[in-house]
Amino acid sequence: MEDCHCERSEAIHQETYLIRPKCWANSNMVFLNIQENLISENYWKSFAPDFHIADSSFWNFQEAFSVPEETKAEMNDYMLNEGFYKIDKSIVNYDPSKHATLVKKLVSANLLPVFAMIYDEFWLLQASARNAMEAVLGTGYTIRPCMWVWHVDPKKEESGWYQHRDGDINSLHEDKRPKVLSLWIPLTQATPQNGCMYVKPMNREEVCVATNKKADIACLQDMQALPAEAGDMYIWNFWVLHWGSKATKRAKEPRISVAFEIEEAGSNLLEAPLMDPFRMPSYEERLRIIAYQIKQYMHMYKFNSTFLEFADNALNTKIIV
Image 1 (tube, rainbow, N blue to C red):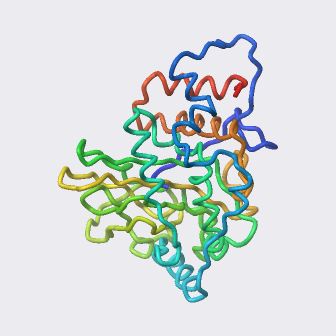
Image 2: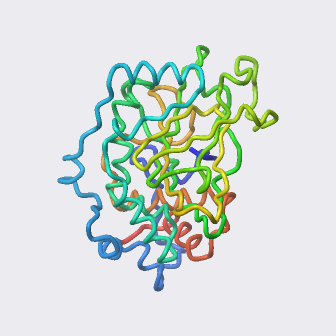
């Protein structure tokens, strides 16, 4: 991902993979106006009637895209050397315009883009990459409870997240194979004008002797832009230095993207419950996971009180839907 400070939360339940619900005792049971909408499944269904929410008939119908053997080999070679790889949209073979339109609608309604994770269509983006993820991480991989949706607005000259590494050297095996990946999915074209990602390829630094996660950008010529078409997918390991750039007003459209964190089976790098990437999360789970994202990314944004109150309520009370 562009950044993740996904640490252990006592609010996460090990068995149900969601934020642990607490009783209503000593809590404010009143949700007014927007608060009521944010937890209302009917509100979200009416907000995007063409999308699905915990619809098993839709969820179970979706399939993962196929990955040619030569692409799998190239992907693993990149992961051992550069540390990142672009999966071309011709392989991914899906149209993200519907997803991008929904994110724009959320932003126009003064709602956070991450509320797109209410809908099956957004969860299934990561599930569709099953064959690609298994080619790098093996079978049995899991999703971390860390995900985000971006809308980088060129009119406001917004930017992606600052330079960072998602993890330390322990996120790699000794032979540099990744234990965990970020799966970054552009829903619109990503260019240097609207804030595309940049990386410092792993083979341009002494990864074998590096022992910390300091974001060092001393040599600018080593950096590489990662432009993308809508429908491409990028993966990178947790050690690769990367960032989202700043958009210019000359850009014609916002950079809209979504990211997931994928961990190989048995790594146990994160002291929080991991999620089955193919199990359909319930509506209540989605609300709590969105709330968890808002709380853990408070250091990146100045969320208004409406969303902070939603997050606190979702994490600390039983939601009646």
